[in-house]
Length: 263
Image 1 (spheres, helix red, strand yellow):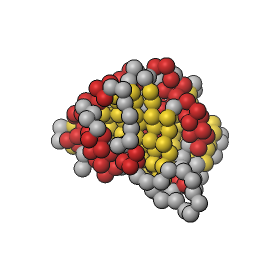
Image 2 (cartoon, helix red, strand yellow):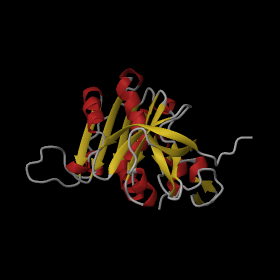
Image 3 (spheres, one colour):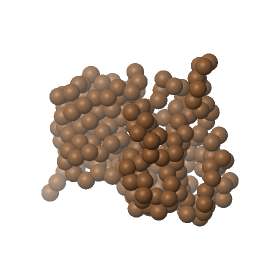
Image 4 (cartoon, one colour):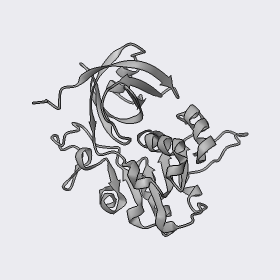
């Protein structure tokens, strides 16, 4: 009988530096993974942390990690060829089928882009499988932008609004919160839209408010809760809200179900 708590050693294939605090680690892994799922990443003596999958390739999964604590600080001391432990994947993830044939809009804030990046990648590479795909991604400032090479590719294949909350004088890109750009979105059939919103709870709250003003049905909106997950197995109860375990029942929820889980 497989013990779900036992992690496996994984070797770092590549490290991509986005900012001083955010790197992507390409880790060896064989198995099925969906965008929006997460792994528990650990280093002995330092602990364990839940990290969303930000990329999926044959033989590897990507983890985009923000250096914010004991475990992630130690992870940043590792380089290509080094190893740390991973176990997973956990959670339900995004079902690509839900968005095929739709006018899809993905709205992400900061590192919230990581768990939904696989969905953006898919429809940027399969443009014929959605009526249209739009990405609105917000970052605090130009120096905080993640996935710069991916943005260059996405902008060639889908509609992209890459905005920053604030910028120095002379900056020529979009400036303002992601919510600023939602009222200007145009659709052929509002009933055939699909929205994905990922980011901090306060960002999700106000973003969904703007989406609903467009007349979008609640069932057309998906959100992801990237918080409070700990064991990944529904055992520790840290992520439990009411009768819902975020790590088991989520972290991806249709808004009809997930709206009661927002702070």
